[in-house]
Image (cartoon, rainbow, N blue to C red; front, side, top):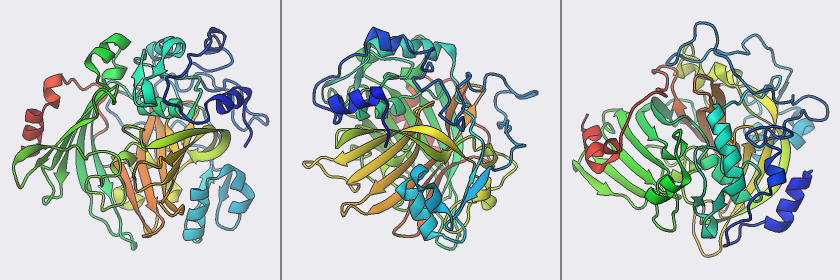
Length: 455
């Protein structure tokens, strides 16, 4: 895998995250942001053959007639695939595919395919996020052991990463608006494609990303975000609820979580809502830290920065996001409807997480492929304790251009052992995300969780 000069230095010096805090980025490198590097830290220029264009600011204007709260129309709807990768020709493109993608071609040779479209570097963010990212680049550090941040707020903390752990923290705290509420569905189809939809309501208050937030404010309160979720349907699960307080420095204080059980009608502390605990109503097809492709404390793994690579990843999947598409059209046997999925060639950071010898987790190794323009994990390959490829995860992303931010519209985890998959975040038949929601700290207390569960 070809490494850039910056990456060569990073891998030599910081191949594995040490227990010490990392060196700050030199001023001459910070000055590259907005010139040879985008404000997010990605390469401004096109690739050698132009198949990945130069970044020109991403999507900066709203479509005619669009207003916040609408579903997001596809700005590339008239485009046709450049070509299609199938099981019969997948080996021709293996240098731009992950082992997990190749495994899906082998598992579903008649139906799994990847339609490859022209690449659009559509990721864009508010100007104040760019400004905060520039400030962070000169000062942000990992706390001792890498299980938290200091001197970072609002923007990406490490736009010029020096190790794999800094890359994963960029994903964890990436900008997705400030306070967001959403109604989504989760489906865990059987092998024949039959499924029961589980409907959730989520509320996310991202303290780290609030405009005007200062690093000292975050460090004083030691809080990254509040998250509340409850099940709306089916009836047998309705009212089950979860509350998470995610801390900034997880050495000082680990994640706090509470659950509400409708049968017991009481709120309980839930210290095990982390790491490889089963995901809510996921039929055993994901772990807690699979949600959002990866979340939570990174302390059970050693994080290695492998380098940068050009890969075919889900991107600008507006067709999959459309409210003119039904859940039954998306959910199929073996995998989601690939005619609704758009893949593009993008540069990604490759980060390998290896389980530490003195810790435990269902996953022994995880390899993350992170979009350079958004720090969104696009694909992940997950290995079991026998070093066998077990699961493959995809984040199907769009630019929510009314914010703006690039974020997944659907996450899909394939379990290669069971031949099943889990689709998280289905929203086509529900209202669009509310990025203008107003919440206070009182909305994220155990008492508020009890009220949510009783609705």
